[in-house]
Length: 236
Image (tube, rainbow, N blue to C red; front, side, top):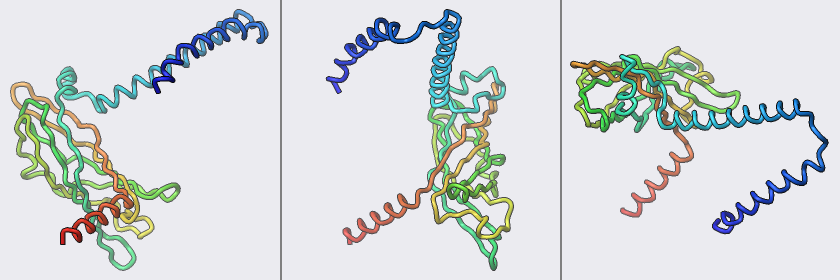
């Protein structure tokens, strides 16, 4: 790697010499107007590439949505907004004859207020889970909504604190045939969005948190289960 780095200046110098001295003699002369068009197109492509890279870096640093209520407190919100993450998912389904009549997901969700300096409530009543299973043309998408998101979940969390809660989500659009039902025997991905943080007081503030993802890999799950059984047998 160090040899490659030391050779880069030499390669750059050689490339520039070829472009500056050799190519003009080999290539046909280009009209000035055409040359300007080429320069403009290349410049636009370079600018677009730079903008796309900067935009991706910005989204990695500050995932959307960005604007809280009131919107002029966006700086404070992006700097201090809480985090939610899915720690564990336990699916449950009920079949009657040849149809899936009920399906639910029990989620263990962490709520992190490590950077948030104020007491606030994390509201899940309008949150939505999107589940994607299968691959290619066999992809299935299903929507889940919270069964009960009130009660103790409306108790404000203290500033700079963290905890974990368990919330059950129920599938909509049931009953369905097994071929149209969520498939928990293959890999699947869950997205949780629509979680709202609401802080009251002298300066009320509320905003939607970025979506959080959770992926189940059946191969990884089986490997983890196998390692757990192997460790338990060695201890025995």
